Length: 149
Image (cartoon, rainbow, N blue to C red):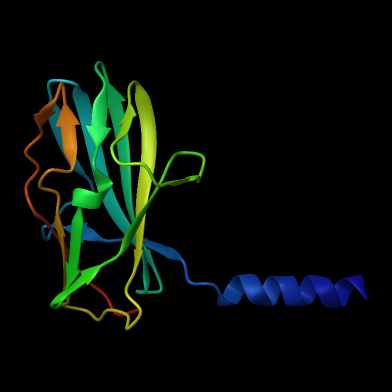
C-alpha cells in the first residue's frame, strides 16, 4: 500500500507546473530601485501561465508604506484582482501596509484565461509605495510573456 501512495505522490508532483521567472520591460529578470528609505527589488514569476507572483524584497533604513489597493494590474482590457501576502504567507488586508528593515512581500494574481507567448501584462504602480510620506515614483512595468505555457 505504501508503494502505491508514494507512486501517486510522485505522479502528482510531476504534473505540477514549475514556477517560471518572467521578463520585466523586455529584458530584466529583476527591477531594482533606490530611494530615500533604502532599496527595493521586484520580480514576477508564473506557474502555468495562470497564477502570477509579484515578489518584492526591501532593504530599508526608514519606514515605508505600501498602498496595495493602488497597484493596478491590467491584462488586455481587464483590471486583474490582486492579493498581498507578507513574508510568512499571511494575507494582508490592511492598506497601507507599513514596515521597516529587511522584508519580503508578494502580490499574487490570477489570469483565468491564461496567457500566451507575446502577451503583455501591465503593472501600474502609481501611488503604491511611500517613503517618509512622499510617493516613490516607480515606472510602469510591462511583463512580456516570452514563452508558451
